[in-house]
Length: 315
Ligand code: AMP
Ligand code: MG
Image 1: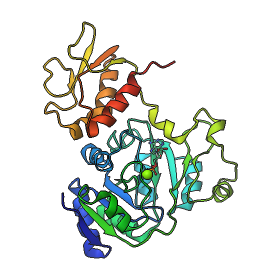
Image 2: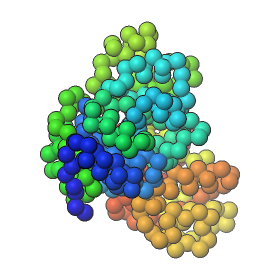
Image 3: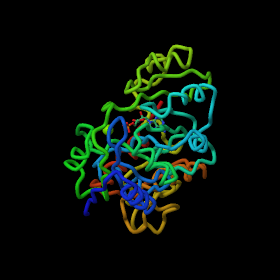
């Protein structure tokens, strides 16, 4: 794949927005680090983010939006959200319950009922979001396990040939990831899920309350949030045949499958369908789900990682 280098002027931003609308991947500057942007409503575009980064697991992605009005389309709003949103635009991410009518792809939130939202402050990011006119899922624009990129050159080093374009907006000013605040507790309390670019005391001032830290809740680390979605049904992986009493989640040729992640054995399509299909099979009340073998390469690694977690015994 040829990676276009776009300058951060009107032409470059218009081109980037058009590419994103077509499902392409575009790295763009934010004040924290460069993000690898994809249309957050497109499961395939988001699957391609994982493929480009070589991420071995699906973590929920932060959804970048242009305005508070738009944020409210995707999340259930609250008084605390109103207060914290006065700190936007900036290096602050709010995790909120997801709106019932949210159009986000299930892969964007890794099948969770919550959504992480941020309005970035970088003028190029804001212009791109306004021109694109929708939500952008954007993890850091680096290969999995490498250092976060704070210049377009860092992005080029890691991702040239793996993404469609890089919008060059110079060096990031904050250089630290966003601070993540959880607002999903029914009691209305706010939890510091990840320290980052916006200091804790500024957040507490606006809230007029102390933040809980994850060890005061049942969440021990932000990363573990990702492992929360598991179906009610029990899962049997690498199933060559479907046993009596089982519902088959197919991949590739699987005539007996109730649902098929990708009849043509395409891993991007399978990743895009993964959480939707698990939710749908759960909704049928299936007690035992057998899953066809999925190759352990490329996106198959992340798909299998997620399936293994979902299949693991839980208390
Ligand atoms: P980043 O690595 O900067 O892209 O931040 C991603 C992190 O944000 C995840 O590892 C989670 O800790 C958090 N996060 C993103 N989306 C969600 C969500 N839907 N629900 C809960 N936490 C989320
Ligand atoms: Mg990262």
